Each structure stands twice: as C-alpha cells, then as structure tokens.
Image (cartoon, rainbow, N blue to C red):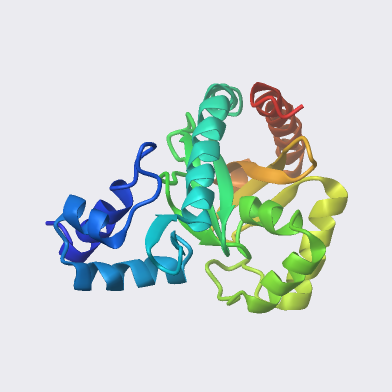
Length: 250
C-alpha cells in the first residue's frame, strides 16, 4: 500500500535529472501530472526544508542543499559499509561476539552494518536500528567526539530516559562519561540499553580528525569481563585503522 502524497513528492524530486537541473512549475507539472495548484504547495514545503530552491523569483526550481546532504550521507554510508564489512566479519570470527558499525544522524546512533557473533547466545541489531546518543558504547563514541559546543548543546537537548538498568540519566554524569571516552579513546557500556548486556566501541576517524562512525562489539555481560574488554579494544582499534585505510582516509 502506497501513500499517495508521498508518492507525488517523490515524483517531483525524481523529475529532476542531469539534463533537467532547473525546471519551471509548469514543466514539473507536465512531467508529474500533478496540477499546478497542488504542485505549488509541495514546492513550498520542499523549499522550507531546503530540498528544493526557487530561482528567478519563483520562476524556476532546482534541487536544494538538504537533498545533497542526504545524498552524501547515503553515499558515505555505502562506502563505509563496503569498507567495513570484511573487517567486521573477521572480528566476529576472532571475538565470536557481534560487531556493529554505527553513524550519527541528528540525536541518534544508527546501525548501518553488522556481523553476527558465533556464540549461541549473542546480541543482534538490525541495520537501520537507532538508539539515542546517551545510551550504549557506540552512541557514546559519537557523542564524545562531537565538537565541544555541539556536544554541550546535544547533552542539554537529549531526553535522558532509561533504556536499561545502567543508562546514564543525569546530564553531568553523561558529560563526565563523554570526557572519559575522549581521554581513553574507547567507550564501555554495561546494561545501558538492555539488562545483562555489555558493549565496547572505538571511533573510526576521517583524515581531518573527525569521527565518521563507531565500531562496536556487544554481548552478554558475563562474557565481557575486564580482561576481555582490553582484548576487544585492541582488536576493534586494529580493525578501525584498516577500515580508515580502505576508505582512503589516511
């Protein structure tokens, strides 16, 4: 079952092509079969969110910067997934625990790739699953390595609700945890998302020093003791550097 209004919105965006980068309202109407009056309302909404920009006092339209940003996110995510997949599968074989690759989207940590662990009891997370930035090792990496002013704003705006028994729900504690991650170079979580589970994560850096993703390992808490965590950090860090080289980031 399709949503008619969404279908029309997508038709409008897809009417732009390399040979038709700029179109008038009537040209878009003709190509999409959307009446001009209805089309104008769609275009106004697209303009509001910068998915389309109006030129020559509304006489013609082009795709806007927001669409470019979303496209680049998708492109980068595909590159990341392809570069990370072999290393993640190797890690899952070596550690026998589940491995996850996550990126930040606004105030969420989003899983874009995973490799299932080999244990009978293991963590799973579907691709596309999102968690708030205050819960979990991967989310903490993405939060901790934000520019400080942005991180401060994010911490103030997050709804710090408890997901598991160990979720950090105080802003001052979250800020301290983020600073600790920056000093250590990795993050550990215990029962922050689900009871009985633990996780560890490291950053994946760009050439400019920005964090583009978090590489994480998760499993039952009883298997992720302190000595195991140290080994996992070593393996994750090694894999992170390999992924960075594959992406041509260094």
